[in-house]
Length: 547
Picture (cartoon, one colour):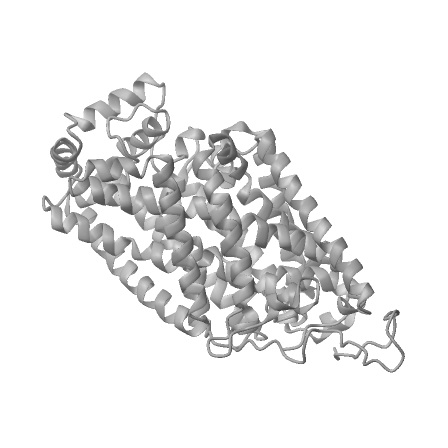
């Protein structure tokens, strides 16, 4: 599709004045600094078995009859259709900005901006405390308690400590985004490699030790670190007192496990998290390469998840593992912090240095992942600014690293402000409960866009590599879009109607609604301002952004 100079709809200019071009400039200024391997690692870190997976597994007791192993595999198969649908969108319009660009070109500018800005910009401000919580429960508190620094560990459970963690998280994410795509790729590569080494050590620990060894190690280390006697039996007794009973481990209970799928979306819904970055990925027009990146990242996470769950059953014991999580969330745990599985596995070696080192090595999963907090979002902001919806400065890129600094600031500064409110207001913390839901809605709109793409933009579709992949003469991408819509609608229904997921909170829904309203207001103001400047945003949305 050609890029045209504006020839109409630009009223209000003085005679002889130069007509503004459609886009901000002739080229984005971004460079293709990532390979398919980088995209695979990003997809795997975005789904992330350690930072997201094992944390989400701890909520299994909220669906007491569900089977995690079954639910993980059901979720992965279903999310694989999302990968196909997003691959189709990427290769059709391989530009920075992802959902915003596709939705605005297929469904219209207002739709694209409102859903993408809310789902990729505003809502990610609220994810900073979520990332900070992961840092706290999977590194800071376990390590400090292991080192005997109980006072320091207790500080990070206070309001001030929570805000401190949020600031650390935001600073880490900001630094990683600011170093540029190529440098970020190297950081995530080494973090991923180190994290995999840590995971291998975990596997060996759990393979060579028996359940009996774990029980004795748990009792010994829990007494040494937390002053808790007979932690194993205390946990089992506490589980009985709250009426929780762990189902036997296995690949079964399909019906009940379907109810775990909406729970697991917190970690398995994100293999396409890098889709907004494909304007900076080499081979972005190649269907097989793009599909390989996201699909491999997703199923590598699934493989690690299955290994983890099987080894939990073997050595830690499926009953104890689930009981420990259940009693913690019920407020009945003998151990004062979340029973982080890596921490408990490290107790199989009675050496403080080893325990701390293992947790530090496994924290590389967090440090390779934390940049995802802002990296993908900055490209949505950049794309909207390049389309002139947002101020021009948000589309400027640094000369050396090709980073949209102003877009990054539009993520950083509000995240700091909202993190402060989150840290000191328990009520506001409930407003973050629908953070996953809002992103899922954005995915739903993009899935709908890919379904109607062949009819809405036939020439664009025919020119796309996505149109060439068919089964029995039927294009697979629109079909995958339909299946993806089914996945998202199912999850939205469960989230909104089933209290087990803890997200159907009235205050949170109202707050999220206000974020959508904010996006509408921003777009309306932009439309009016640009019209006075002689720029028609409606014409811009009919063209594909330049490289």
